[in-house]
Image (cartoon, rainbow, N blue to C red):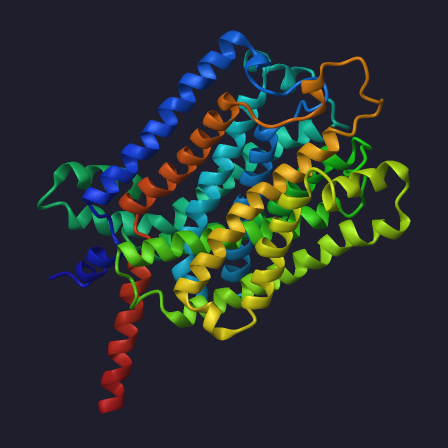
Length: 439
């Protein structure tokens, strides 16, 4: 029996269970419905949506901002904790890489969906304006996708080699597939040195890339000088919000994977407690920037901004605003102070609530501001004065979320969720230490 067999069985590729097949079928149905709705949107035009001259950024851009925010978890957990050699982060790293990659891919796709004429996308490159945040957004998103993909792939190479050798005798097709991705890995000193240097360099790169990505995303809003977006606080506000959304998504995925793969001995309450403290810190930081964004302007705002704040605090958007603020931010920040709420199941429920509220938070950032245009709304249809996504928008948006979940599901099923090579090394070190202790 190989020293890797037990770890392959525990954290390696697994076949879909009946529940897994039903889950995949559900996601495929959502995606198929989204494709049909998007084709109809291409044929009929944006008239099938409820976006008009005023709310020209609707739920699609809200969804885009959410995906960008969630992908930031790759910079937080993968890079920062890897570079600081925090041992407790090991069970989270690969899953964080998977979540980050799935979300940033879907952020790029969502931008295309929002375009009424995607056939003109080439104009973004041909007629790019360097002073425009949109140009830099077009540059930074593909760059972040490539770095996220490499940061996931390079640490996987030794595991692909292990799976190549594992399946050589009983499944030659799988052995060839994993062998292709293993790129002739043989654990030589040169290969190990090159891999470690590459991972370290990518971890260093993804931190500034993540900060730039979130900052540019914020500049897309704040450089428009619109009421509600005209804030020098927006970049750190977006970055702190991305920390909350990203860690919330990661905790949710880790809990589900831990339960389905029965990884309780690998991902323990100790790991959740540590991540819970980081989660709590992220919530407190984001709460601070929310206070700066909404409370301080109450005393200094001009007429236009006062009307915007009134809409959020006591007007049409007051109920969702207070729900996402109190239930999706203040309550988690309080609960996660206590150790009993940093255990796996309570943290999972808190994380799910935070992720849902984080999505709606982006909707509240986008929509109310657009309903306060530069010029008074007059001489326009009554329907233009309000905005709520149409059926087409909801179906397409649901499909993008389903596609992100499908990417995560497929990677979790066919890629080791933890480093088999590293687990084997740690087990060998443990056995060696025990032998020395007995001697």
